[in-house]
Length: 239
Image (tube, rainbow, N blue to C red; front, side):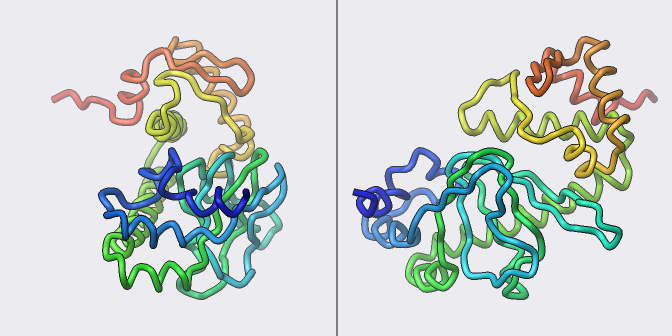
């Protein structure tokens, strides 16, 4: 029964349009279905892969939430990203053939395992898959540039507003609420990612709540005014 589930995972998966190319013929779909060799469960707090581990596969997040992080020379945990259902993980290992970060589950999760040698083999036959892999890699480069901009030139309020809006946008693409989200990461992890101290993260959340932009109940966030949050990120300049 498990093999049958795996066999049809890509073609019948409700996340297919998020992590796989669209518009494939039946023959191409059958080939793409051969990408996923198995599914792997990762318990909250456990690693999908570690920094320095040999790279063999890409992983499509099926359920759950992950963070990627590095340990700095002074022993601090530096968060480099957060990944959710429908997103691809493991791209960091393609160049050097070993992973350059840790990927830790923030809640119980399940991933589809796609051996990279199989991706390369099938991509030679299915051009749309090759383009899709390139598109995913390009998106990752753009994301990293966005993070550099976030950390390099934005104030604390701008950083947190941009983070919340990005998270909301990604969740909307998966059919979730347009105004509510549950933070799977801690405020310490948000601070690590955004280059902010924990106190600054908490203070900025409180500021947004006091201004009526959001409502905060522990990890549950309701966005009352997304447009106003957007103006925090891109303030109007008066001439």
